Image 1 (cartoon, rainbow, N blue to C red):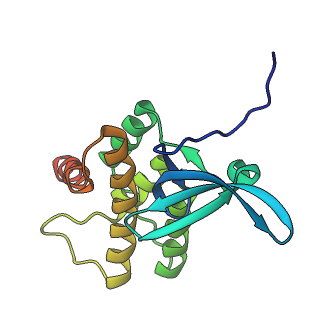
Image 2 (cartoon, one colour):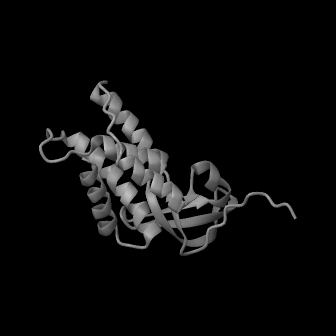
Length: 168
């Protein structure tokens, strides 16, 4: 029986929403909205203290996905240890590119941002906005790593910071 690709997440499943990071499906509910009965994934994002309702029919087009595979996460961690690519374009343009990569939800793109904005001791300090983007990307990557490895976010963050320091 050939079946259409169906996104089915159960309560308790961890998922990634591109612009918010890792969340946990807390329920699947039916709700009447604008006269239409919709089935919704109810997703809780602890870090942002936010609950998001995504229509089941829009899950795929919204970019909602399961956690990365271990292979994808290993590739992202390998990306962290690579050489930083710092473009010489205006900061506002680079900041926009970094935000786009973070909001893509792709762990490898997020790892590129973390790698490119990471500063080691002895390097010039980051501007406030550089630091904000760096922390946003690091926290997003750490959130998915933590869910994948079933550890807390602090442990995952330490692992990322360790890889970055070792690569320098």
